[in-house]
Length: 97
Image 1 (cartoon, rainbow, N blue to C red):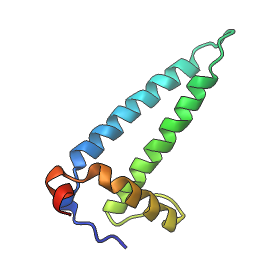
Image 2 (image 1 turned 30 degrees about the horizontal axis):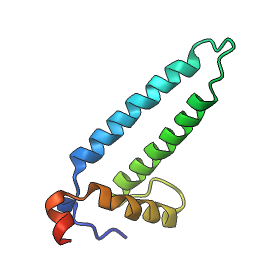
Image 3 (image 1 turned 120 degrees about the horizontal axis):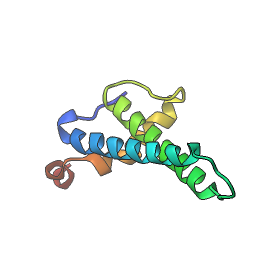
Image 4 (image 1 turned 135 degrees about the horizontal axis):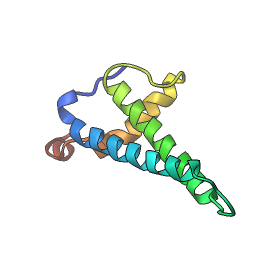
């Protein structure tokens, strides 16, 4: 399954990105829970959708690094994790590995 050395990953950056994304999602939900009136909130809904999808991808990466699966489709989990790994490699490992 996972042969990634955890020492090569910046878990602090991954955690910080997840927290920032969670804060954005909460702010968007506040906007959508308020009375809409005549406001067109399609952009807000779309933004929420994209941020939730990104949050799922980050959770998938975190689970993969722990040797677990976040989604039922294990091949998709591995594909997502491998695509995101370069973003979270520690700088000293990104140059040599």
